[in-house]
Length: 228
Image 1: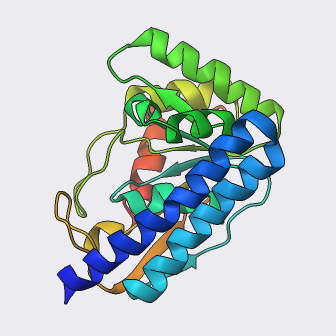
Image 2 (image 1 turned 135 degrees about the vertical axis):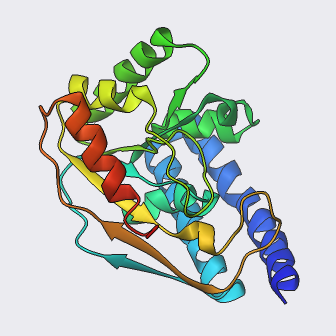
């Protein structure tokens, strides 16, 4: 049953995504409004397919702030990455540079305001990331980062990547950590989804200006709150 549901989801979602990606690509060259409408529509379409084809519900434990903040989110599946435009107003999501090489999608993602980061480039990557993040901050958009740097299986707690603390310090934004448990529904590297409820657990807002050790410790504990 898991495999059949997952196969149906893949067929319906990826075929339907063509319309949204093409619309976003056209919008990237012609209309910001069209671009944003396509991106937000794609995110809602993904949520709809997950709900009705995979029987995956989502719930938010806590209150999501509406003002621009730095969201630090646990990353266990692609689900939460695609869900960001549905959850937040014009989020600028920091994600790996390789995704921007996808034809069509990469152009649209960059035009929308997603922020690429090259984990192998060291300090130069951090500087480039900060420049783009400050541009998004000037537009009063929330910044989203997955501070552990990559998807991890549910229950694992790798240390935060060094770039998170640098971003926190240089942007001077409050941080809202969010734990997720999407890894319970899709084992990393497996081609199927389980039905169930995916939870976003919103942590306490953390003010700017804290020492590196403290901000890393508080964020690490908060984003792993569903791993106990």
